[in-house]
Length: 434
Image (cartoon, rainbow, N blue to C red; front, side, top):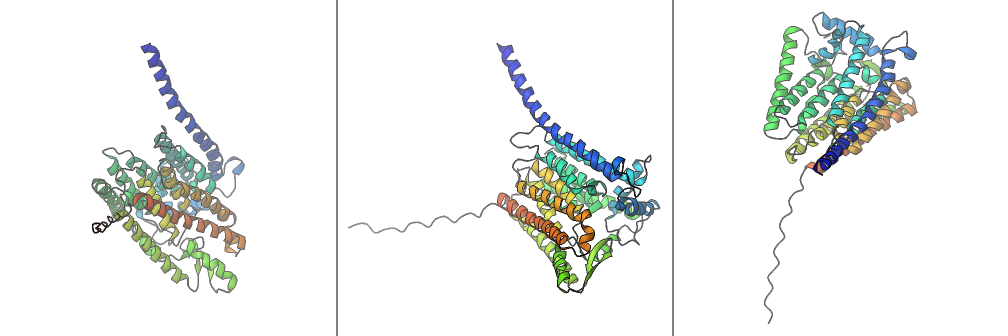
């Protein structure tokens, strides 16, 4: 009888473990199918072959930077180089695949980072229970294909892989977790700045000290190495200050409308992107910068008022998604590859059943669809003044704005305790009855 009971219990445990494993086979299978098509399209292989080769950003822009960086200097004479010194790492990364030409090696490495993110998400979701969910892997599997071939033709997927790894490391609550989280955030920030926003949700006290110190030290180390090894490492600071209003940003929407009502401005290539030039553009640029400061102030207020990360593991990724959304919608630039960041952060949020960002993730997916509709398919029409293209862009940007507001509201409501109500006033003493 004892043996029978033990066998039955073992069978139940095995069945419980097999269920989640089978459920995770579906996103892995869909990932294989979608990447087979889209990575081949990015590489221009098979039915997608083209004499023009891979995306121009890889074959010309990145390859040009690679040649300059390989000579021992940053491309400080190129105004389109607007990245911290750590961005040299993904640009030089194709050296790791010497048997491929630069463009194909770069895309293959992006595909490897894509696979690494999926593997990490599947590992984190391998035993869904009351706290874990398989929605995280699905978000990554579905979200990237909605952006066409862009994720594998920009180095943002590499930075996103570092950010996802940092959040998953922090979620383990191991002794080393905070320091590993901080090191990865510091490295990511030196590559493309935005991962520094992941620090906003760290629990106050020991966890903040460990993670913030590790982030600062790792960022300083990488920066100092590049400063000593290659001239022009900090040239990006000057070029970033000169940026205007990019045609796909939220601040560009008034100018898309004004073009049809006699506005004298126009768009032009500037600093590596298409920007509006003309009356009131600098005013909108200053307003965008002011709104970024306001967003930063709100995040500081939230951190002071909230019980940030005291016990709930979902607070850190939720806060990270909120912070990045706020800075994306207030930015003067909303490039298509920015959506890769949001998909990755939303995927980590959805690993946790208690996340406050489930509806926000749906809005991010919707914004991905509209992003691809505008870029690359209708981008020339948008520049030419097409009303349908401008309406699609407006819908995308307004969805992102709604997602940022909803994300902030839900994070606040679920982490900031309500103010304590004053005790009720004592009832007045009644005179004794005669």
